[in-house]
Amino acid sequence: MTRKTPPFIQTHMTTGLEERLAFAHRLADAAGAAILPHFRKRLDVTNKGADIFDPVTAADKGAEIAMRDLISAHFPQDGILGEEFGESPSANGLRWVLDPVDGTRAFIAGQPLWGTLIALEDNGRQIFGIIDQPYLRERFTGVIRENAEAREG
Image (cartoon, rainbow, N blue to C red; front, side):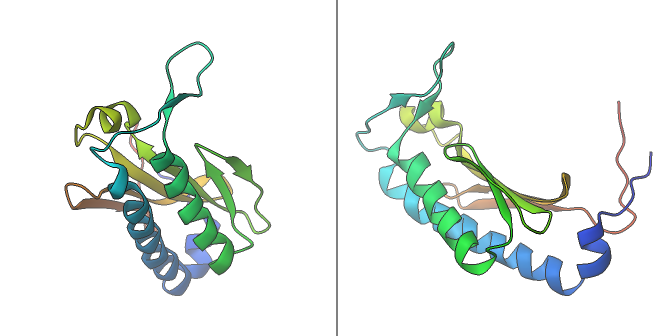
């Protein structure tokens, strides 16, 4: 099945996409700077889940705030959907999706099996995503390019 190229990529393939992708790396750096001082330290853990244990720490909240502040300062028209603070609507169809500490249980236990997830969507269609593992110093980026294919099954 061949997907249609999202509008943002069609109109901003060279400048807008590359600018926002470089910016996403800045977001990952900011999140890592907010998270790492808490890793393998004594933490206060809050359960935000109703039916299951869904932990949140100051690292989760601090990293999301750092990313939200940068997005609001540089791309105020873009929306944000974050795990810790919910959604801020988009004025232009672009929305950042943020999970500051994916793997909070491992984070709390001092295991390096966690990372920061950052994605950008255009009217609900993903443009790119980043998985950053600041403790391991590994970062993975996936970008939907023109004529990209999605295979199901």
